[in-house]
Length: 301
View 1 (cartoon, rainbow, N blue to C red):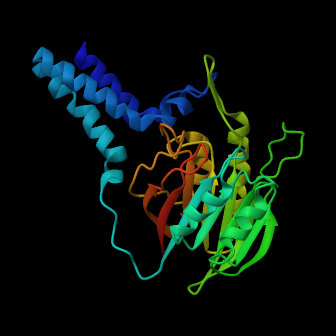
View 2 (cartoon, rainbow, N blue to C red):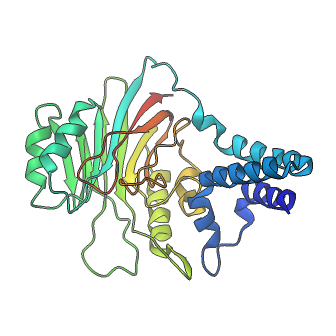
């Protein structure tokens, strides 16, 4: 039995893309928590040792190898800073944040080049502008998302990633050009629709549709280098983000689970790039948000 469970775990890890996504998007649900399969392997290892089952121990080599192939690189130490690095921060600040001033100060203390924020509400926006202004003289806000930068920003545009089924006012995407000392970089900030997990599976159709629209915008981007900061309500292993992960680099090191802040289970906040390598990603200390802020170093190609 233990050997069979080990074999099944290895098959799910190696061939998770073959798990059907219809009718309940079970494939996406599995992929959202795929790194946690390591706990299943540990439990099976403990049982195998308890039972002194040589067959089960040998069988466990299969899921261990599969997990290491998929996620082992994330455990490596961060690489040394390069000559053309940028540091970026991503944070869903929460529309119920009771201390926007403290949140803004915490993010600024990390001294990134760029800060992407989501769930900006009108009452809190002036606070973020005031606190961040001394270190980040350039910023752009569209709807509920914003970008703060040490570099001049030009060509700010609203990004239309609204699913067809949403009829109320909804603006959660922007695109701007950051004029850095190295080159002009297209910076996207986005907040994709939320997903819900219930007994029927994963409700993610709006999120998937919005990810498709965002992927088309990135594909059409004429600038060579693109940075995407956002609450994408999905992990990079979830096939729902394939329109983005198929054309952008994701973090090479670090798990940086970001949600929920009280007990992080998944990294649904993302930092991605085109024509740049996303190095080590990590979470910053918690703010008064239900998400943890993330910070990553990018090396321009």
